[in-house]
Amino acid sequence: MIKAIIMIFENCSVFRSILLLNIVIILNKKIGTNALIPIYFQ
Image 1 (tube, rainbow, N blue to C red):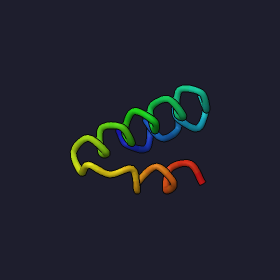
Image 2 (image 1 turned 30 degrees about the vertical axis):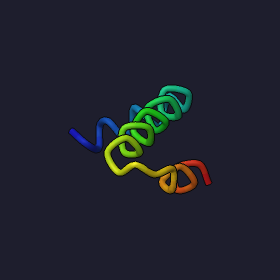
Image 3 (image 1 turned 120 degrees about the vertical axis):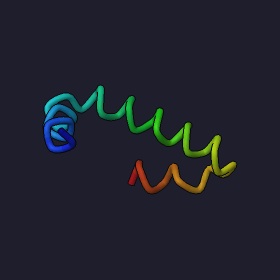
Image 4 (image 1 turned 135 degrees about the horizontal axis):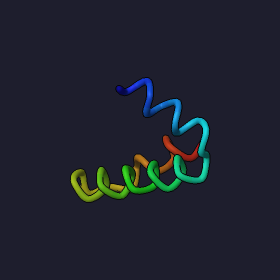
């Protein structure tokens, strides 16, 4: 299932970017830092 999701992400870069941004926001809320943002947007 994870592989299928990854394939969908690769086929839809806009959706992938939005989802990654949402993941970063969620992780930042849990950890309380913006340090993760550069990892996702290199």
